[in-house]
Amino acid sequence: MEDPAYGVCTCRGKKRRGLLESLIFGLIGADTHSLEAETTSALPGLLQGVDPRLKLVSLLALIVAAVSTQRLTVLAALFLLAVGLAVVSQIRLARLVRQVWIGVFLFSGVIVLPALVLVPGETIAHLPLFGWPITLQGLRSASFVIGRAETAATLSLLLVLTTPWPHVLKALRSLGMPAAVVAILGMTHRYIFVLMQSALQMAEARQSRLMAPLDGPARRRLMLTMIGMLLSRTLTLGTEVHAAMIARGYRGEVRLLDEFRTRPSDWAFLLATLAVAATILGGRL
Amino acid sequence: MSGSAFDFRDVVYAYRSQRALDGVSFSIGLGERVALLGANGSGKSTLLRMMDALVFAVGGTALALGGPLTEAAFAEEATNFAFRQRVGLVFQNPDVQLFNPTVLDELAFGPLQLGWDTARVRRAIDAMLDRFGITHLRDRSPHRLSGGEKKRVAIASVLITEPDVLLLDEPTAALDPESRADLVAFLSHGLREGQTVITAIHDLDIIDHISDRSIVLDRGKVAADAPTLDVLHDIDLLRRTHLVFEHRHSHGIAAAALHGHLHAAPDGGATT
Ligand SMILES: Nc1ncnc2c1ncn2[C@@H]1O[C@H](COP(=O)(O)OP(=O)(O)OP(=O)(O)O)[C@@H](O)[C@H]1O
Ligand SMILES: [Mg+2]
Image 1 (cartoon, rainbow over the protein chains, first blue to last red):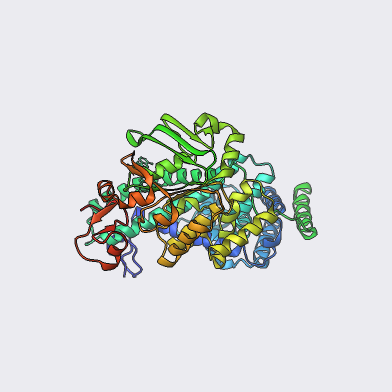
Image 2: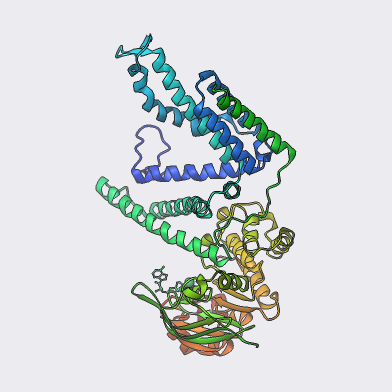
């Protein structure tokens, strides 16, 4: 049973999460996510086997195609292609639903909702409750926005889930991304871990010392101090990590044990995706 | 003893207003094995970081391997690179030291930064995994290991490049008795002949195995610099610098660790 003041309540019914609790939940989520990503990138799937550099270019080409296509059928086909790639890479669809599709749908849905009724055109239905007319053109433009966002997000997640993070960094670097940018990306990733660990430790420390549930103002005060502490701790630790990297000879360049090896099948994958993208872009499909 | 590893004269270091090192002087020859003793906050970690050119003196002069330990000198790429090849530091907190996705990558990090070819790196990794009994952890994520496992990986990740000068910040903290004994055995006769080893440590009962000389720090100053056995027998000094405390209840085993009526303060900071 969780401490009620901690706000982590697995019981049904009253379920209010404070700011810090949400933050910690998010962090636990991120931690689980990264653990899962470590696992999925090691599975023997199709994308996992592709040279990260070619994979990056391929997926990027598909994203560009998805963003620029003018036909819903083409967009749908690209989306299905992404789903197919997930399947052959052993990424469970439930995970895509949970991690991308729902979130992206809600987010872009809110943005495009007005388009449904604001874009003038042929009325095909009426919005329940309000009775406002939904136009075919409005529905089309809303579908484009959501479809593009979903497809692009799915393809990006596929890259992250099938490639160990340092390999993504190294691939970016070998494709000409400046060392400084790659170093920042690398540090960001590490910061997240450091922040997460601090947050979890502080939550545990707090929980273990809490004798009775706190009242509202006391809780809020405690949360604010904890967030402040967390930030300053993260900064210190981040600096420390950087020092530890320097101490072992780091000079801003990502070096890995595994040299990327490009096999003929990698080129085939690249050519296939580039062909798809070129057909869409060149044929203005 | 040939040449000197470190030459410090009246070295001062401060974190903003807090003086962490306050006029520290000593010199350590190549091949010496030195223990760095002192209560919590006495400046051991700060000194080690300075010896590893991660922080620089704000007063006095500090030399390492004959060259100046200054920010200007280390802005020079070649100086920095040559230094990193020869000096390695195991941090007190393994969490900051382990930043790679797997133990394998962690061990590979140093050698790869120093430009070793991959075949050599792989051979060295296998040898290290074996020596530290962590072969089974090879593909695990370092930040998900236990405290003692982390510590072993951190030590292995620095030792792998066989630095001429090895700086260890509380290497036995968090280790269980058996791992601790293994490490002590390794530090006392597993190292390369002529390797300089400087260890900040609180375990008085093992320092005579891993050092011949001890430097005792007390609030940023050198309180003593003498052969380890002499330091261990100077009860007044140990008491004054909070390295031992008189025990108030009897623990037969712990007391036996040192001098009968005294026992080592595990964190150096206990009071009477
Ligand atoms: N990042 C920092 N910012 C400000 N003060 C610091 C910082 N790190 C250390 N200090 C202070 O500098 C002094 C020396 O700290 P140092 O970490 O070198 O001690 P130590 O001998 O390693 O202690 P311990 O045995 O606890 O590891 C302490 O008073 C400490 O409070
Ligand atoms: Mg310390």
